[in-house]
Length: 253
Ligand code: MN3
Image 1 (cartoon, rainbow, N blue to C red):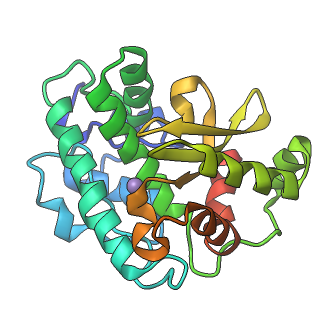
Image 2 (image 1 turned 135 degrees about the vertical axis):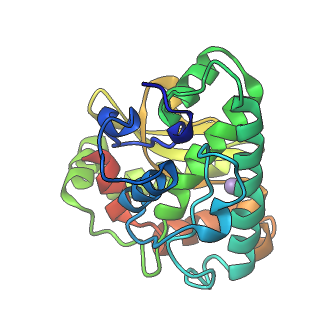
C-alpha cells in the first residue's frame, strides 16, 4: 500500500521491505520510521530534530553531520562544513523536494530517482537529487583521523585488482584535478572491478551504471574557504587525512 509519508528515504543498502513500509509494525509514525532509517544509515547520528520540522512530510531529509563541525580541522574547517552542510546541502534537499512533489518519481527509492532522472534527462532532479545522494555519503566518507594506506578487506581487493594503492590514489586525485568546473571524483565498481571516474555538477556513477563507493566534492564550496583556488592541495589533504575507509568498505561489501 502506498504511503506518501515514507518516500525518497532509501539509500544504498536499504531493503525493499523497509522501503515499502511493510515491516517495522511497531513503529508508531512515519517520522519514527524515517528516524529509524536514519539511524540505520547513519549510525553515529542520534536524531535530526532541528531539520525534521522543516518538511510537512518525509521526503528528502538533511541528515545531521556525523561529527562536530570542527572535527575535521585543519583539513576541512568548521566554517566550510557549516556553509557546505547547512546551506548547500539544505538547498539541494529543498529544491529536490519541490521538484519531486507530485512527480512520477514519488515513491521511488533515492537511488532509482537518481538513475531515472538521468535517463529521462530531467536536469533539475539530476543535480538536486543527485547532489543529495552525493552529500549523504560525502559526510560519511570523512572522519577525524581518517586516511591512511590500511584498507578494509573488500576495498583492498578492489584496489589490488586496480593496480595498487599508489596508482589508485594518483588517479583519483588526478580525476579531481581534471574535472573542469564543478563536480566530483569517484571510486566506483562496475562488473566487480574498481574504476576511477569524474562527473560534472550533481552527477554520479549510479547514472552511468556503476556503484559509487567513494566520492570527493570538487565544487569550490567544498574547499575555497580553506584552500582558496588550490584544488590539488585540498584533494591531497582530503585523501590522506579524512577518508573514512569503513564507509567505503560498507558500500563495497
Ligand atoms: Mn558540495
